Image (cartoon, rainbow over all chains, first blue to last red):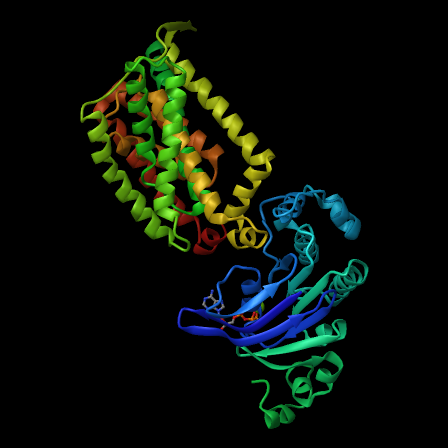
Length: 228
Length: 286
Ligand SMILES: Nc1ncnc2c1ncn2[C@@H]1O[C@H](COP(=O)(O)OP(=O)(O)OP(=O)(O)O)[C@@H](O)[C@H]1O
Ligand SMILES: [Mg+2]
């Protein structure tokens, strides 16, 4: 589905990704966690075709759509226009399936996207990405600035979509606990490199990951050199 | 009173042509964030082209349409040069359009010479409420009204129009959904060229154009465009009409040579006012 190999991405002189490798299989849910500035957003923008890599390659089967960090809606346009523009690359611009998925959005379809609450905006952002009928959905910081209950509801939707339609999901999260809970497999990205990867269960038992992302003891992290 | 109305009506007509030029500025700026200083050139090119076409025996109608198409093509060419390379900073593009505007003098003089050019538009006068109005004025107003109607239909009710608005609203998100923002910018330049051309076709029968008329045309259009912060075509239309009437009154009652000074004064005043009103943060979000 998605295969990233030795990917190097630079912003001018600064190296944001330094030899990153990562795989997402068909129908899989994979988490990508890591501290601020690790390069998570850079990775998603590269596989979305927005940034040309300096070296390495990625291979993508099918269509990818991204729910960007901070939602990035067309603020002055209506909810319906936002959703319809998500279908730019496909023929079908019918928003009904999004309103079926998120019934709260139906009555808001004529509202300007910028006037919605954070949770509603995130639904529009997810809906807009789904309009492209992606085979792989990349979600950047699903939980950013949202109340836990709203995050849980959105996460539930994603899991259900993954089960019912077989759409693969690559979930980038600051909230590592949530991401490791939702996705069976995960990668830890630190300073532009994959620092650890494996099943989420194993990773969340690793002392270093616990210390850095799940609120474990700090001295354990120092001992293994991960998380700084 | 009659004199006042006479001036006002002619001011509305020229205001309409300012509005078309202003909308060209706005359409291009919204999508590409480039202030296109070559905007006045499109009007000159179209005005001169019509007169050439007419003198070669092409009838009215086709001559004007062809001239507007030529201006649209000129818009596309300016766009390709100014924003064709991915990642060109808007300020660099702006300088490029400025250079193209000046460079165009050479091409225009080569093709049409350095003398003012004109042609007769709609001849005749209509009697309206005690004053006589040139048919050409009515034509200008009608064409402008129809153009604005079509533009609002295009931007508010078509998928392509909304994609253009999306590029203006959030270029990053537009790229994410797969819109080619650069191509949309080129489309905007083409549209801007056509709008400038339309203004030229309408104004040339009222006041002859020469190779350097673009400066006056662009200043008036730009002054109107910044009424709406370079982003809102509706406000630019109002600004253009106010400007057109003000200039006609100044020229009529005072001195014709002060006419173009009005635009400069209005423009400076607006810029100072807007700079004071808008915080840098608000500018960012616009
Ligand atoms: N447009 C840019 N120009 C220059 N440097 C950039 C740009 N975008 C990101 N960077 C740098 O690249 C590095 C990786 O940034 P990136 O946004 O990918 O991190 P992230 O893992 O998504 O962080 P966060 O969790 O805060 O969202 C950072 O050091 C950042 O400062
Ligand atoms: Mg990020």
